Length: 487
Picture 1 (cartoon, one colour):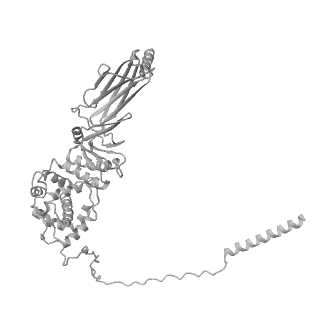
Picture 2 (cartoon, helix red, strand yellow):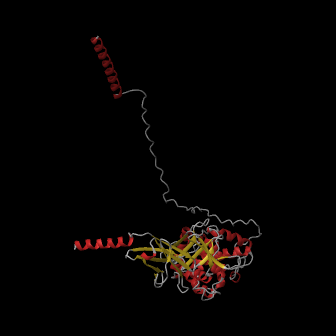
Picture 3 (cartoon, helix red, strand yellow):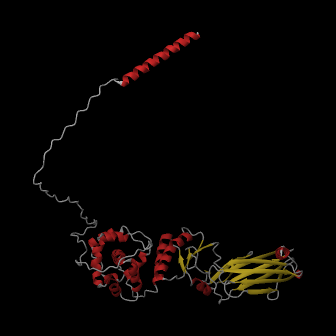
């Protein structure tokens, strides 16, 4: 058995050596003519009479491999001391290649002495005008970002990391995982084909020492980009905000239609999934409501044209949704968001609360000035969901059309209404009746005065002190006697 394994290893080594250590020189070259062709070329440093075959195998990611046998299918090109095998593959329009796909190829160069050189390689199907591309995707390739490297302020990995939690949260909420592919360009790089002076779509590429210009296949470009959201990168903050809008609307598109839900609920839903803090928003909304009335549900159904009204509209929309989530629980409110596209909002609200929609605004206004509102504005859709008891809707007893609380004068510098302070009230004094016999007065003995301790050395301490002095004197006399004796 060991001898058989040894022979097998020697045979494999001989095959590998036969395919790699060949006694002739060769070279290969590939050139992508984006988006419609690829040029493959192999050169063998042997006279034409010594080259038997050159077999090229092209393996796209989909479809059957293409095998080209030269010179049977395509003749060689001969020079003085070498043979050139060149094949231009015009990519079939029916082949569904996508940006970023990998196309593998293999050259098999064979001499008349059955010497074989095997060359394997691959290229990425992408816009060759860009030196390097960066692509980031999640595990199932449903959220991908692709962009040229070197665009100022563009960090593809950071953008993807900001969008991925939103994608996963929406996927968990809706049960769907739609494919979202972004292809980002800069303003300096034209999208798709270049154009000549006459406006004709062209592609220019360099092959060896030659610069070649030919027509660009615009139809294929359009098909390629149809699967992507092709956008110009206009700064991280602006682009991320727009991308978050796209995420929410894409996930909720199966539940919503053109007429429902109303515009304010759409806008509030989009803001709900954005990971931005809202701690200052209740105070700003209260200040606005001190100088103007809240918008009615009819007014909230469309986006106002007036910029100032639009600020109030957005703030009120977000606050109304937070109120629904606080009042009836997050799962029930999110379910209403999905159902609001199939029925009018009034019907969805009645299904949620059991009350008429006319009671929503008064109850919301009372809630806005409560401590629960401040807590609700600190809620994040990305924090763990806790069980919420089923709530019953209680209309506000003071349903008025005027803003709460009313302000006697409208000022530009509105201040928050002072809140009442809580003063601790002492307990009510109680009178305890005396016992029938009254209090009995008893004499309390005075403590004995302490015996004064005289200053100085007394008692046993005096004896110890005298003994110590005597010992020191004796030691001194002994020392003097020894000193005189030694002299």
